Length: 474
Image (tube, rainbow, N blue to C red; front, side, top):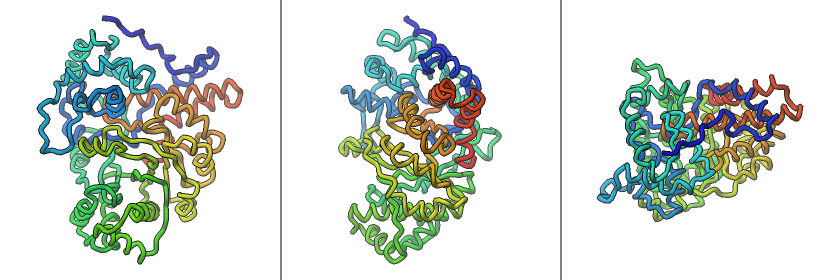
């Protein structure tokens, strides 16, 4: 079998020798810092149970929509990648064996050349599992067996990996309806790992989402509030936020189609809510209700201290037939043009100077970084820029983010890095890529005599460790 060339410590650092040397020196200061994971999609149940992780294909392919969407673009059916239909009553006798799924990846490995997904996978195989053999159809089975053997060992159980990776804190993403039983199990047990919930109320706010009314009814039941009125609905949400905070939550997350914010008076909010609840509202009213709820959630954040994250600008489930069949999380999201200056103006004028309020904004429209978001973050004390996500958390996207936001927002109106991970073994590679890109960018400023090496090193430590802890109040 052919081994990959051993990765040198200089991977992803600038190619110019003098700048690379500076970047190498900065990187040594941050390489081994603890990992802060303030936003991700690891299920707390995995860490609560602390049982063997699933087979290599399920762990590293089927659950990773970065990988499944790209292989699907090459004509590989989602079923062949282990993506199951969302209907629990649907039988799928043709579901392939995990080894066959892994072979599919190997057969299409060249399709991932140069992509961040391949970079993360290769680094995970090497640094987490100790596998240096290059993936190919000829080596697929041997690599699968080696991975499978590793996953059967105690040092590859979820909590052992959490500790080995130096994860200081992990924040999960949880529905407003979540019981948080797994977070309680972790907190009440002997293990010292810190796993906190993140409050994501999209399922009870997005009225154009299938099942919204059922979710709202469930919200009322859990919170012991009568949700037939708008006032009761608001009390139920406030109740759930208090419940999440009592379990350690420090942040909320909102995946709205746009960043539009609009404050309705109580009578108008009641009217719109009643129409939507009765099934009589249209898409325009659903968007108006979301815009109003953005204002309401900002008001709640000022009162309860939960930091607010906003992830707008994605057509989620762009392929409606496939989304209907397999569910929303198959990678069929498509970025859209964003607008923030006008959309967020009502919210920032009301809360942007309140020291109790924190708003972290993300975007999939990179043009808005330099045009709107960086200037806004460089003015409003409450507004911080979230790092690149989904399509842009690549080496190129991470570098563009720094280049396009530095002049207006600087480094200290940003929040470091979010791994957004869906499998525990992939977490270190994602953080390491971000740290290397930041060190390379800072090295360029040192080479241009815009920063001293001491300032650049301190900034790298802040970006990797201190800023996310501060921004998310961890």
